[in-house]
Structures are given as C-alpha cells and as structure tokens.
Image (tube, rainbow, N blue to C red; front, side, top):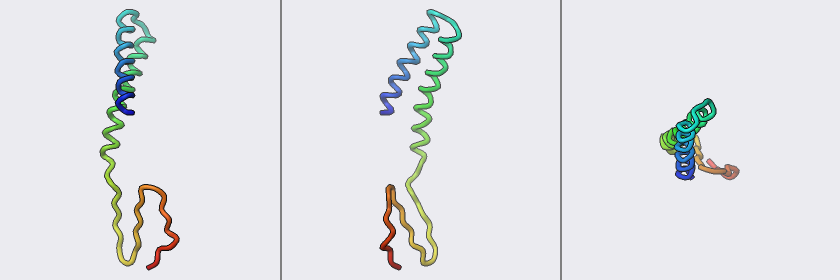
Length: 79
C-alpha cells in the first residue's frame, strides 16, 4: 500500500513540476509544495513505524503481567 502511495505522489509531483514550468503561477507552486510534502511524508511515516519496538513489560513481586497484541481476557487468572 505504501508503495502505491509513493508511486502516485511521485507522479503527481512530477506532473505539478511540469505544470509549474509551462504555466508559472501561485496554483502550480502550491501543487508542487503539496505533492512534495505528501511524497516526503510517506518516507517519514515509515521511519516512525520501524522505530516502534516490540512490547516489553517489567513486573515486580507477585505481579501478573499480560501482554497481548489484541484483545485479552483476564477473567480466569489464578495466583
């Protein structure tokens, strides 16, 4: 999905540059800026997603720790 977003935003960025060359003005400049921001943000979002590490948890004493990537049912935990 991210590859599709990058490809589309790159095409739009190149198209807006061509538009800016042939018809200089305020609207083409906004299109260049907006498409550039979209393209760059697709790379920044991936870097943040990769930084997120796996879950970790520290317990002390007689504690019970539950980690779940989804819903967890804790009704029947016995000590």
